[in-house]
Image 1 (cartoon, rainbow, N blue to C red):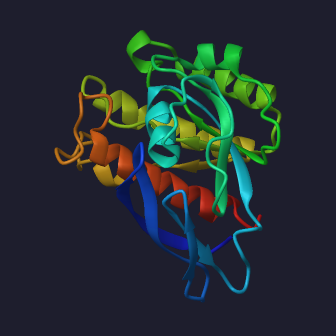
Image 2: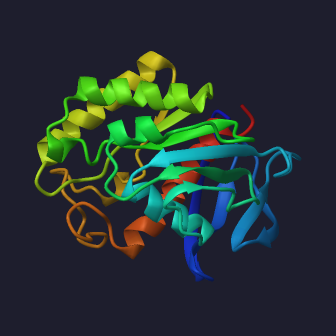
Length: 232
């Protein structure tokens, strides 16, 4: 939905930090309808969250961390529906710690009921010196395997030993997405310093963020998915 902007804060709830806060759409002001699973549902221009979009996720350890933040459910390997409320529903996919794009391409499969695909991939390609052309072929194989027209790729976060490579990878990733008609987003944008390194507030181990970083990434991703997919 064009013009949609949103900001949400995460609070500790149950097994993970669950998202809550405010979203705004177009020229209207959103208001809270109800809360379920720790997530605040919203109302946009007399539309209700019943008009939602179901998103499948394929990714590496970063997707594992984000999915667990949103759902409170461990998402390792193939995972089924975990988050069933709200404008955007994460309903299943394949996520694995240490997975590169080639492994994802071999493991990806259709997800019943999914409307769109979120891919969080590439972080493990750079340390293995996988060329972007190889990564791009693998990303296309993932999209083909899942079989959905609506696709969003997430940029990769800072990697302490590959700062310049990350900048170039993300540049090419966004260009690929544009060329293929996919969406793209950067859930780590507020965690990057000007030189591309981690903001120390969110620094984890140089590849992964800390808990605060995962919470912020979950917020940024949810906002991007709402903006790019809801109502489309």
